[in-house]
Length: 277
Ligand code: ADP
Image 1 (cartoon, rainbow, N blue to C red):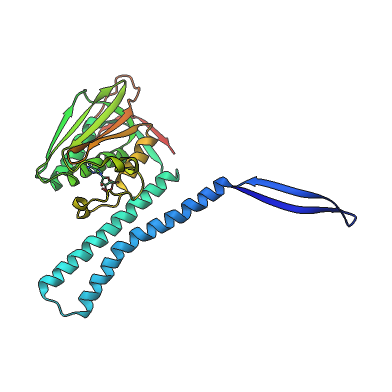
Image 2 (cartoon, protein in one colour; image 1 turned 90 degrees about the vertical axis):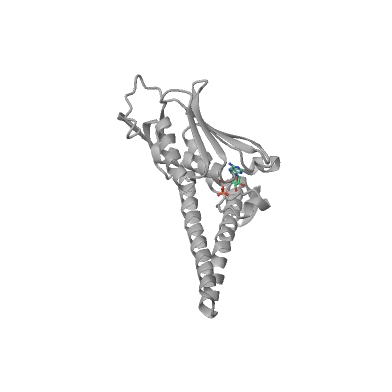
């Protein structure tokens, strides 16, 4: 996009030329377009759960309802309000990360210990899923932000749980390949249709499929994972077969530290601490 500015030039009241300014405004135009797209997506995402909260609250206020019906409506209001909170928190987190305002506290971590911790946490909320962990390399040290890396594992693992049937098997394998640390999270659930793969890491993207309509989510989890992994100079890849299951693989550079002494309890090597923006 080009902006043209034209003005006649005068000397002693006589026009002697034209000032022509030619400016490339493609970038500004693109930023404006992204801003308005962003505002309309966000307001749509907020409006849907808010409409349910308002609708059910009005029914409760203005109708004589049986106690079990009241309870049903209150449960829906509670669920939708929780969904709104998650949506807003995830969204603000992502915004902060993308704008570069988020500080990453890089520390030497044992990722194997971090995986075990995340699995223990998720297993509590999904007791029927069989989550199996296998470390193909001894405790591996990466330079990473502990909370952010925890979030990556939790987001991927909770998706594997959400999008696979109750009692499903989930395998988490970690190891080293080509001097990179990898974490592979494999489920045998719904799988992802081929046409959805290219949009998977986009903000608010959710696969539109009848089976999934009932499954709660914000469509921000994978965008957050991608942002965090990229900031750690890592990569995220996905392989999936629709109806069969999915494999998400995160690769991260291994920290170059001679003989680090890691405390498995705290996951943190005591002596090294670095911060990046
Ligand atoms: P959501 O909050 O919807 O889970 P995500 O960004 O985490 O958002 O994921 C985006 C979409 O990708 C999901 O809505 C789901 O359709 C699909 N997806 C993510 N992980 C899996 C998985 N392990 N198996 C099947 N589909 C998945």
